[in-house]
Length: 206
Image (cartoon, rainbow, N blue to C red; front, side, top):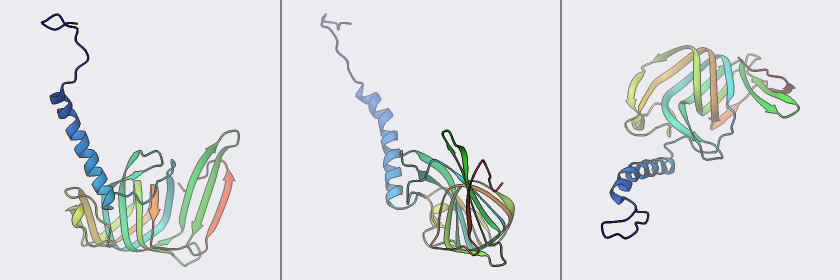
């Protein structure tokens, strides 16, 4: 291809078009970086490539908050999650399971149980980065649709990004809890009657 003077054209960049495309991407990356730096995203550690399941006959918690966030894995991929944050929580008949598929051997299951002997599992400043949650729930003084950056009923650092949807309540009670998650963080986690088993095959909590 030649120009009007008959000279050959080399590759050219339309800087105006480049700017239109690049600015939103750079702005989004910058916003994400700022959010991570401020701790607004659930990125305290790189999560594994496996989700795990948690069930409990009942969960009772004081100081409840829930908001959307993002986890990161070791490859830097971003994983959307719903963070459930509770100041103090008690769980009866807790079960946690994760299934790993290994070459030749096949599925290997890791199962953990606690709180089955009459003494509940206790946790403080509990954060669960979940992708699925089910059960029968009740709340007191719940606020639905509150700005995630203004949450104040959960743990002190349980806040999301400004303008994002969130909810909070004085307390929460969930029976027949079923949850799938990428990560759990807690200030303290007391597992009464802890039992852990590794076995062949797929054996999940639900």
